[in-house]
Amino acid sequence: MKIAIDAMGGDHAPKEIVLGAMEAVSELEDLHITLIGDESQIKPFLTSSRNIDLLHTDEVITGNDEPVRAVRRKKKSSLVLTAKEVKEGRAKACISAGNTGALMSAGLFVVGRIPGIDRPALSPTLPTMDGKGFLLLDVGANVDAKPNHLVQYAIMGSVYSEKVRSIKNPKVGLLNVGTEDGKGNDLTKKTFKQLQDAPVNFIGNVEARDLLDGVADVVVTDGFSGNVALKTIEGTAGTLFSILKETMMSSFKSKIGAALLKNDLRGLKEKLDYSEYGGAGLFGLAAPVIKAHGSSNQKAIASAIKQAKHMVEHDVTNTIKTTVESMNLEKE
Image 1 (tube, helix red, strand yellow):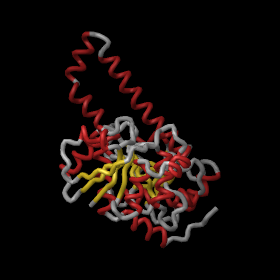
Image 2 (cartoon, helix red, strand yellow):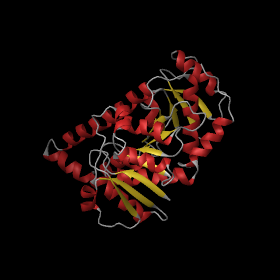
Image 3 (cartoon, one colour):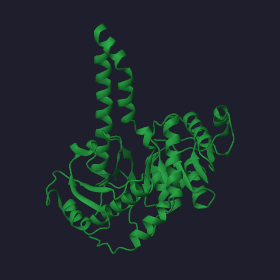
Image 4 (cartoon, helix red, strand yellow):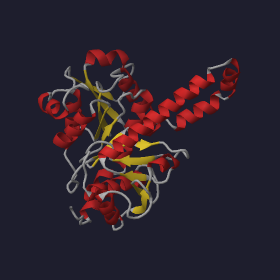
């Protein structure tokens, strides 16, 4: 299986991208990776080229580029060429830690959508206290959504959770301002009714405060609310660890306590570490496209590669396609 990776995307590219690729091919059988980017910057970190090919380009889409315009004008950029590898059948999936909007645009314009899917969703797996994690979608691919879009998100998330994350009959919740039936705005009320008839294990409305307790395996919402929820979780987790570290280092007594609790604190941090879960899938595209976190390190890139490989092996794209085709969703 071949996977294409944008070697120039992300805060720590190309070093962490290259190291993550080498880690993945050393652990996974039948995996070949094409790294796309500037050879002069990639080669210093590529200590082993086993099952790794290079496709050279010195054009890059930056975080400051306007996504749609950049994809159309920078056709030789590492990100666009990565998507093109999938479009032309030379790779089964692609990954980038670069410009999220540009990857979304390249996914739509180059890779293409699954027939029947109106709007793809950006879908990260976030940690929970029990270590299982949950899928949240959408977190920003589309800030506006209609009820049938959220129903499609639920279907795609459920298929992914069952096929890739091996969760039998995953619980699907609708993010809302209360758990009671009939809560929310016009969008959530209409979505609630449609989800009751959808081929998913819909458990009803869920509140944001319960997400990290594992209230559902899949949580669906519009991209605006999802992005706010995602960044609130990330920011809160980062702040709590900073406060904890500052408290532990505040006195000689607390430093002794920190030393005694070192392994337990490390375990807690790993439980809440996004890099364990790979990247955010752009569900609804004609092939697996993974958006790795912009600050991804070697471990996170290797996890994203494993995630992409599992999506291909479990034929997630075609399963989503056949499930959506079997439905007649009301479009409002």
